[in-house]
Length: 168
Image (cartoon, rainbow, N blue to C red; front, side, top):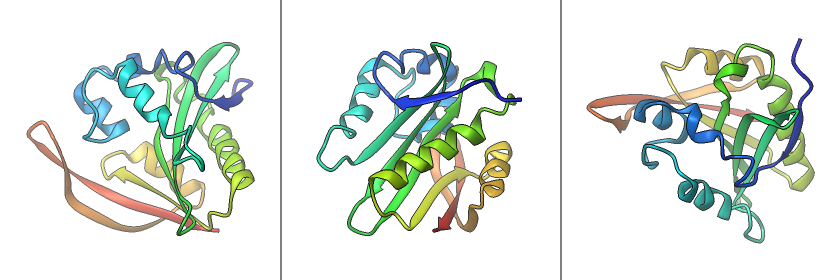
């Protein structure tokens, strides 16, 4: 059974533990893409959160809390013109993985998205080797639409990116 979870807007203070979740450049890239520098720092977090302060917001950012501990984080990038929202930078704290946090956390994130606007398309990108994430997304109803082969360079490796979406 999942621990009691509260979902709240992300703040720099609540995201302070986030850098410890990504112990290698590859782990950070898997979460945040190739545009982030390892190690993740407060400046990069502040830049991400600045997009939540525009009118309308370009991004939503949430944390999942168990007690006072940040155990999950997700961002949703918003395309207001075309009604497309993209789940981005979703992670569960390493010591909470496999405890049933992801599904209720994402359900609440999607409910908050629905409360702020009309986004009939919800999409995400996931690296094709991330089978636990893919299983979660497919169980939530996301459908694989294609693969961008060799789309990201991480160190000397090239990773394929799968594109998933839900039309709502």
